[in-house]
Amino acid sequence: MARTDEGCAPNFARIFLWLSNRASDGDPVALANLAAVYLATEWTTPDVQQHLFWLRAAAAKGDAVSVAKLADYYDVGLIVPLDRGQALTLRRAAADAGLAEAQYKLGTQYDEGDGVARDPANAAHWYRLAGDQNHAAALVALSTLLFNGYPGAPADVPAAVECLRRAADLGDSEALAQLADSYYRGDLGQEDDAKAFELYKAAAQKGHAHATMMVGWFYVKGSPVPQDFAEARRWYELAAAKGDAEAMRRMSYLYRDALDVPQDLPKAFEWMERAARTGEETAQIELAQLLHAGSGIERDDEEAAHWLQLAADAGSDMAHAELGEYYLHGYGVAESHPEALRHFLIAARTQGIAEVSPWARVAAFDGPPANRPRIEQIVHEACNEPDLMNMKGALP
Image 1 (cartoon, rainbow, N blue to C red):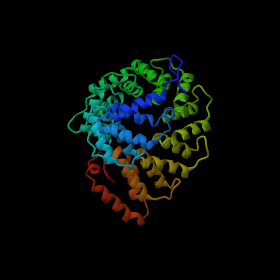
Image 2 (tube, rainbow, N blue to C red; image 1 turned 90 degrees about the vertical axis):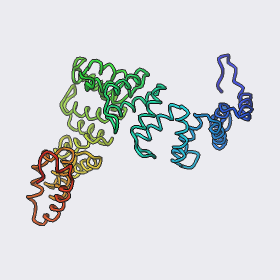
Image 3 (cartoon, helix red, strand yellow; image 1 turned 30 degrees about the vertical axis):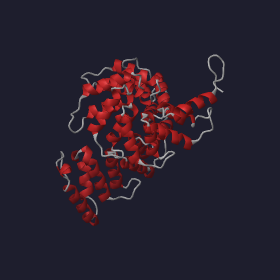
Image 4 (cartoon, rainbow, N blue to C red; image 1 turned 45 degrees about the vertical axis):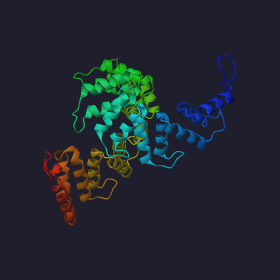
């Protein structure tokens, strides 16, 4: 049992009685606390129905935190039936009452189109209100909208960076990492490795995986700290332990290129495979390249095609371009010029036709005559896409 500083055990029965009396008088704070009591094992036997009863009573009396908690319950179907509409109504009420967390969550719903029509302007409105109450996550989310711009609001990089600064001053690790990214990219006009490193290290010390990886990268880069591959590896391993896929990829490069470790291609393959299994598209493509080359493992084009397909399914244009070559030459898949052309044209939508046109021409014209109907159908469909037709380059 917990004890006070004087060494006396708190009288839970007395406090419980006092709360019950205040709750009976309709005091919203007492109602909310009584609801919490029924989830606290040190106070009484947990009783979710009693918890829900008193929580509803507190919400009915206008306690915004209780309203927001009910919204969260309806949002996921916890204790109460799943009801996204009711969750939205309650969350909006809590946000209107000024609760920063509810404002942030409502902004996120409008930002992502989660249960409502996507509305970046409305998202920004709620993020700003929460940010005005020093809600760090809301400031970070608002910065993303400001960096990218949205209908009716062009990109505003200085304002975005200022949001990150405010959140970073609150000690938020994500804000520290993103502000470091901003200095590293030179968003305000000039890259600043020293400031970026300082911020990455601060975020890393708070456990941020991406920032931890970036500290390692600066030791590889040799700016603003001396190049030190051993130190880089230490930071990469810390980031990899937190699940950072890029750190795993970079560990693969260290073993591939013998940077502070003996060259070990099987080890390089293992690290790349670990990265690929996180779902990172770049790692999946590079793993496919290792499998195709037989680097660190026996060549396996079928497995390589599998990883390329995963990356392509996730939307990688580079994976589609490489899959086009696999179908063109029959690497691990049945040779198919129409399927090759289809993948090349998907890649062209983002890479530009000129980038894949030579291969696309081969797929379109060098295949068996039996392919002609399907080839013509694919090209006809492509010709009906204005965006594709207006790209630099030309269709086969």
